[in-house]
Length: 167
Image (cartoon, rainbow, N blue to C red; front, side, top):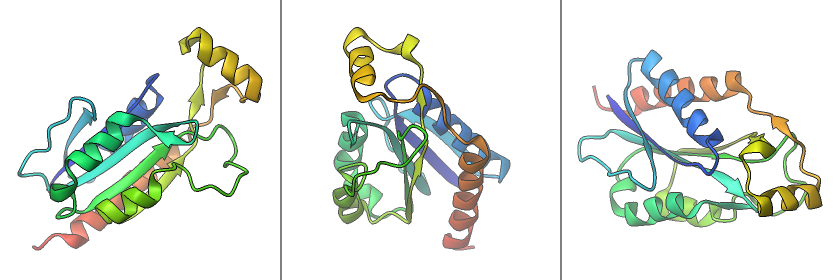
């Protein structure tokens, strides 16, 4: 069984989540490649893909969307799971589904699941404009990622992948 975890990360938080998901899959006996969406090439012999992105201003990063669209034909033939990393501490209070692209991604890829993980905000990693923006919206600072939930979801994906493949 071979899976690929593809991610788009701006400041490293989502890359760390992708790495943790890869580790959880490996612990369940899945061979895993973890790759940045901007550089990732989808191998022909992969059995499943976990695709995720950081959420910025309600949207996935372009490299994750580009990977999804550019590989949509191949991805529709595979089991796919989506993950987003972004809200800081609390789910968005608006009624808009996040990320904004989720409906399109669901229609295009027909994923098995999408999960939204809390993110991290470390102002020391941000540029000047980003620091101004987080002050303006009063974004909470800190690491809100729940590693237990992230790893548990990775194990759930491994279980579902094993169940979906022919023996």
